[in-house]
Length: 253
Image (cartoon, rainbow, N blue to C red; front, side):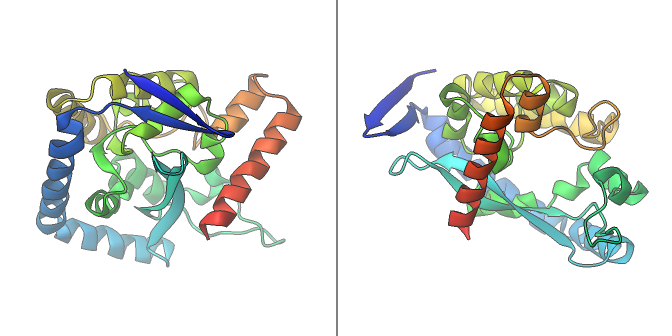
């Protein structure tokens, strides 16, 4: 992987040389395949949307800001809204606070996640150009702020619907392993690698039905929480990074 750090005052721009396939062909494949998926599987989108409305109520779609590719002009990740079908209810306690994830994720939501049907709306993100079919999964902004410069190199590629980390353990592997797989991918972006990941993703999602659970947890730890638990950051560093994430999101609104 060719990497170039450019100092501009206190700003560090992260750049990576991308090949012809990644710069031109990959985007064309994304557009064609996303359009084809919307047309061919439109009926499935309607069925899932209706079921979500019946089982969980509205809104049917869940949107969340995620970091995309680094803008070479600013050196910052472009924050975009990633769309999914809702898989959790909006049940709250007597104080009006949302119940824990494991209580809001019912049987229906678990099926959506196990089959990855909740991720169908991300095809529209691919069509828009926010995402690609294959690439490092877009993590949360509160995960991004804990990444080192080397780890942020994953953001020099368009985030993907699936990637190497997803076919090599998904949330069953550590954060360090996930990020290592992402960095490995951006060193070897090519057509045959993407095709291999696509076939393995389909097999794991619909044949083996691998879910997103981590151990006995319904959802995996955020990166910062994982680092704090492992003693890799102090409570003060953790709080500082959380505030940084809030500032980034506030600037997005």
